[in-house]
Amino acid sequence: MSVKEKKVKDAPRTLKSKLQDLKDWSWQHCTWLTREDDFSDVIISSRIRLARNIKGYCFPDRAEDQELEEIVHKVKEATKKCPSLKNALYVELSDLTEWDKRFIFERRLASPQFVEREQPALLVIDRDENLSIMVNEEDHLRMQSIAPGLGIREAWSRISNVDDELEEHLEYSFSDQFGYLTACPTNTGTGMRVSIFIHLPALAMLDEIKSVIKQLPISEIAVRGFYGEGTEPLGSIFQVSNQLTLGRTEMGIIERLEKIAQKLVELERQAREKLLKNDPLKVKDTVFRAVGTIKYAQIMDSIECLNLLSALRLGVDLKLIKNIKRITLNQLIVLSQPAHLQWLHKDTLSPRERDERRAEFVRKFLQL
Image (tube, rainbow, N blue to C red; front, side, top):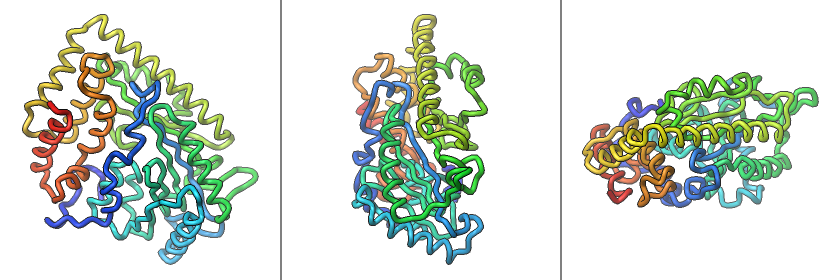
């Protein structure tokens, strides 16, 4: 299954989801979307991912299905013994429809590579959706934790605790020389990827994104699009993450990315001040044109929606819009995506129907 909207196949007209438990939680359980910190005007969220493999088993891409099923069983039994995961939801990938898979991907609970797998795989989700574990993605375990704003240390505290609990019941593949062994050599070492989901509308309006990226230590840092590797930025939202883990400590990686994130926040805030000072009318036109479009649009595709929400978010941050909260816009970034619209309307919609419902839904959600 492709994660791009145009390639998602229509499911049967009666939409019966294997993920009903998760969908019944509603967005209010997605706590990384409902809290803020001092950096939330620019950084939407932070994520830490740990890659781990179980000693004695082939990496998933080289393993037979029987071996992958054994790994699923071992990890499932281990997670059930973890106090931090006592209320977790267990989702077998084979039980899901294509729209279910799209739903968990949009929710940032799983990677596009994971939901496209056809071999035995398991997703473990904690009830607050702050943490999930992909079993048999590129590695046996891909644990990830998400926190609002520049909450890298919050995410690290959570995922480190779960990692320690699991290690009491699973023997990881580990080398005294290289560290944690992973399918991809760039993950070997700590097995850690730290990333931020960052909104840079002013830098985009000033056409300064490329020059800012050139200032980053590109050998250490990767800048990707909205959906991660191989995708384009949408709504001026980018993912920034570390590249290498070998020879580095966890806290060293965290501190380095925090420093880079804070620099990006500083540059974006300066760009916003520059825009307001040099061309306030252009800023207001961008913001209020988005308000008008949302208020009266009858058809709205996903890309247009993200661009409009980006303009509104800028307007809220610059205090040009006072009756909409930033958190509301963060929630819409997720809720306006295709599978979430399917869920909200309890039926399978054609692409045209989704675009019509999206325009109506966003307008009502913002009370415009």
